[in-house]
Image (cartoon, rainbow, N blue to C red; front, top):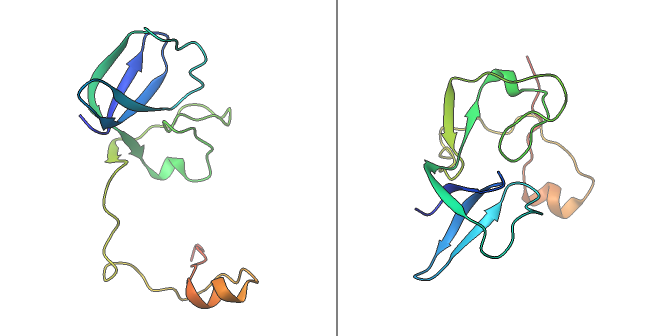
Length: 118
């Protein structure tokens, strides 16, 4: 399936992108230094998704949402597809505290919201 996670024999995970009749393009989510021509790869049956939780706030994670900041595992009970539609413009909060980049062209065309805790 397009977007399905695949696993190479040496453990690297990838995401299948372009599916053709005789080959599949895969984006690697790891170094992949041990992958060679003829390496085995298996489909996982899972579409690329990541866990979501308040516990991820302030943490540093890799492309597979695994913590790399040395502060232990992160628990999450919900998952969200990586390739999901953004919320509609009506349901989003409007920009009320804009971030000024100092570049007039960007500041006048693209509203960037400053996220602040109330």
